[in-house]
Length: 107
Length: 111
Image (cartoon, rainbow over all chains, first blue to last red; front, side, top):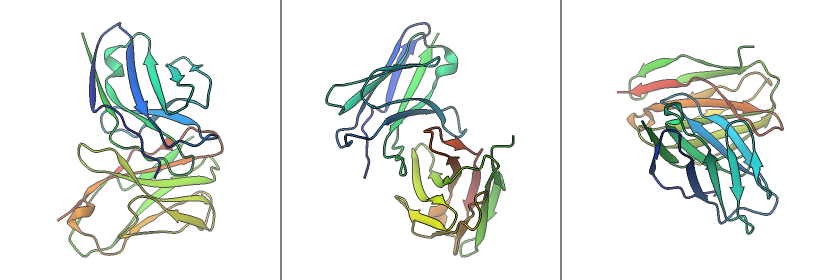
C-alpha cells in the first residue's frame, strides 16, 4: 500500500510560514508526490505535486528530499482560510489519503 | 461545467437495505474513484476505474460493488447496508493530469 506518515496536527500563526512534513519512504522512483487539502467536510482540493525538483505555484511550495523519502509543503504566508486538513499522497491510480495533518492557523 | 455531481446528498438506510450512490462527471475524464470518510478520519479508497468497462479494488472494497458502463457515470452499490457503512462518500475523477476533482459528497447513515 502507498502509505504516508504525517503529524496529526500543527499550529501556525497567521502571516507566518506553515511547513507541513510528510514521510513517503516506500515511494518508487517514477512516482510523483501530490498534496491536497480538505476544508471542513468538502471534497479535497489539489494543491501541488512534484517528482524530484522543488516546485512552486500560486498556492504553495513543495520541497522534496534528494532521496525522495520525504517532502515538505510550505504555505509561505498562512491565513485563517488555510485552516484545513492537508494530505500528501502518491501512487497515481490508488491515492491513499491517510489521516493527514490538521493545520490550525491562529490569529 | 457541473464537474462531478453526486446524488443523493443525504440518505438514511435501514440495515439490510440496498441502494446505489450516483456519480456523474461531464469533463470526459477516464479515471473515476470512490472514497469513504468516517468521522475524524482520512479518506479511504473503495473502488476505482481507469475507463469504461474497467474497475479495480481499493483499500476497503468489501460490501460495495461498482461498474463503469459509460465514461460519465460510476455508480457505487451497497448490496446489504450495515451500520459500519455509515460514512461520507466522495466520488472523484481526473484525466492524465494529477488534479482529482471531487464531488460534494453523499452523507449516508445506516440504522
